[in-house]
Amino acid sequence: MNPLKPAFFLCAGLLAGTAQADIFKCTDDAGHVTYTNEKPAAGKGRSCTMMTREQPVTTISPQRRASPATPSPSSFPRVDTDTQKARDNDRRRILETELDAERKLLEEARKALAEQEAVREGGERNYQKFLDRIQPFKDKVALHERNIEALNKEIGRLR
Image (cartoon, rainbow, N blue to C red):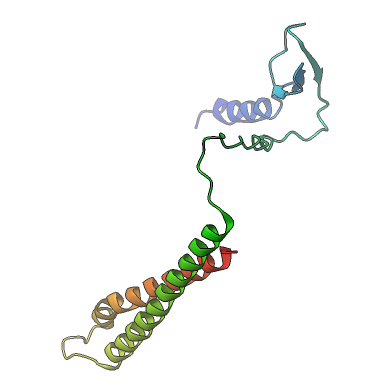
């Protein structure tokens, strides 16, 4: 083995640990903060300070404020309160009807799954074949459970 190889890797490892960069925090006239490792040019409408090495630096972008809602134009159609209440009641009734139908379908899917789980066919000596056969029934049950959950959330959002 070459005696210079271990010495080379030792020196390379020591030099890699000593690399450091200066971090500058710059604020422009609008108050936007930018962090950079390049020495900023003087002026340009921003002030920059070098951060100490003990200060933690995060790279998480700040939360943006939601833009104010634009008002509806005066020509935008308006709905009176009674009409809107009638629409809301119709929506609630439709969602509750769909929820009842989904509950019935879920019950039927659970019954079909239970029936299939109780039956073992002769060619299913391998347990994986049994699992493959009943998987569509499990998927159907999961689908109806997700639909019921979504409908309950939607009904919960109504006024």
